[in-house]
Amino acid sequence: MIPYGRQDISEDDIQSVVDVLRSDYLTQGPVVPAFEKAIANCCGATHAIAVNSATSALHIACLSLGVGPGDWVWTSPITFVASANCALYCGAGVDFVDIDPRTYNLSSQALARKLEDAERVGRLPKVVIPVHLCGQACDMQAIHVLSQRYGFKIIEDASHAIGGKYKGEPIGNCRYSDITVFSFHPVKIITTAEGGMALTNDPELAGHMSLLRSHGITRDPRQMTHEPDGSWYYQQIDLGYNYRMTELQAALGLSQMRRLDEFVAKRHAIARRYDEQLADLPVVIPWQHPDCYSGLHLYVIRMQLDQIKKSHPQIFEALRDQGIGVNLHYIPVHTQPYYQRMGFQAGDFPEAERYYTEAISLPMYPVLTDKNQDYVVRVLKELLQ
Ligand SMILES: *Cc1c(COP(=O)(O)O)cnc(C)c1O
Image (cartoon, rainbow, N blue to C red):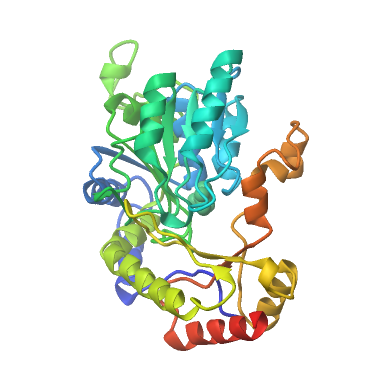
């Protein structure tokens, strides 16, 4: 099966992990801070906090921004469930903003309209979580302007987007947000097996997130209620979690970072080949906003079903039957049973729901060969013509 995404692990990556195994520390050693520094420098943010997943990063990002019971967090319905669940972990409510029909990202126009209504009924969000779907940045400048007008905070879910740019600057620099989150799951742009990172330029948020990642425990005397009892001493000053990243994971991530630009360039080369070869088929190929250089985590096409004799599920299953591991990113979160029980209904976010009935993610990863890509295109052509 040709998967839709997979990691690219080099001998250097393997050696970096082996070196850690032979070293003194498997966790809480020097490699995690080195990895954090590398990401912060690469993205142009002042602070980076490594954690064991992007889900954990989203959770502590919400907590550090004070999200709690009675608050509302808004995100896109077209995302992985973690972008919404993080608010529920904090006891807050979740709502969604429909997508832009061209980029499939949270629409800044829909956001502006929803904010107007929310202000009228006194239900403004505390935090908005734009998701950079497929690696293409949301309309961050417009969302930032709205955040100043309505007083909400912004967490960028950039799980798909490390290595990408927005208005010529790296995604992750937090110019238009309070916190940016990356995922290092194996299908994402770089991997640590499991892992995530939260970036910010705010030293207080950074301090709070580092505390929350490790039980809410500090060893910094300046944060303690009194002088340390001795050199063994620590204080728990908040309720945190064990969300730490291991040295093994950080070593893999640090080694992968050296090939970040190469990975993204390869994804662009693959996208260009798809763009050319699919141009005559009844599908919508990904539209790239001129302000964006996408990380291209995913290559999503939309079936123009009025021009195709088969149904969307038929095309999807036929591709799988022929060894092509296509996927669908994503099932609109508000249609999940858990969210339906909270009162969401089919029809609430029509652009997102329509997208779901047409989208297919084609194989897209740096080690996808031309031969395999040509096979994907050939099978698609046979199915659609
Ligand atoms: C993968 C992903 C996550 C979760 O990442 P993990 O590292 O697996 O926790 C969150 N949001 C989006 C948009 C993702 O694609």
